[in-house]
Structure formats: C-alpha cells, structure tokens
Image 1 (spheres, rainbow, N blue to C red):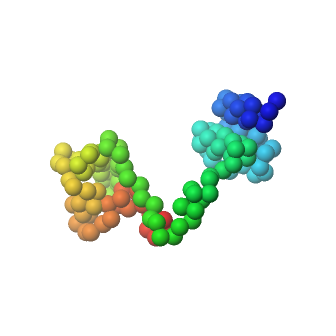
Image 2 (spheres, rainbow, N blue to C red):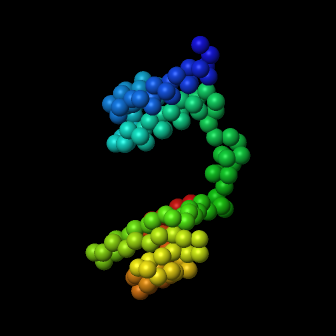
Image 3 (cartoon, helix red, strand yellow):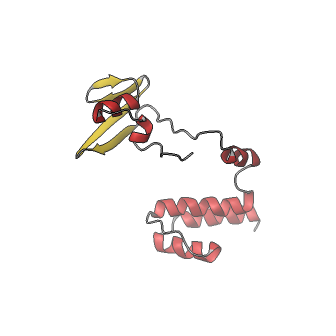
Length: 137
C-alpha cells in the first residue's frame, strides 16, 4: 500500500472513530492526546496531522505570513453571521448584513456602533463581540 493510500485509509478510519478511540489513536501516533471534549474537533485535528505528516504541513508562504508581526489577523464576519454578547445581565444579539449589522431591528454601520450603544462607552466592536482579543494578533 502506498503512503498516500495509507493516509486515505487512516483518515477514513478516523472519521468513524468515537472520542475514546480518537484519543487512543492520537496517543499511539503523537503521545499525550489533547484534552478536546469534542470528538469532531479531535477528529479534524488528528486527520489534519496525519495528512500533514505525509503531504507536509503549511507551505512556506503561509508559515511566513503567520510569522509576520506587522499583519493583524482580522476576522471579518460574513453576512448572515449572528453574534451574541452578554452584557449587564442581558444577551445582546446582532446579525451581520452586507451594509453593517442589525441590532434590535435597527441597522447599524458597524459592530463598534452597537457596542457603544449597548455600553455607553467606546468599544472595539469585533473585540466586544468576541471576534478579537486584546493584544493578540
């Protein structure tokens, strides 16, 4: 069996494994298994690592891009995405649309405008809604 066929079979087997078997397989291949409680997440990570072992991981361009300190990683929520944030004992939910966000039936220009409306203070909207962490790329 070729290495690539072996990877295909391994990934197919991983796709059918329950969480306990995924942990055993991880430990057999890489040592201590991560503490993921989600079988789906562990399945995806294990399948990626098995494939990366044979085909290689990230390409040089991607590695170089990730290593750059001057490029902020920004998450741009696609239209239709719902974001929720609990503030002052209440859950606030927005829906992202092409031209901004909808909050409580009103269209706002940005997440920051909604965050300011909710808190009464200036906020970075993506940070307020959990899309970005402070001082983290």
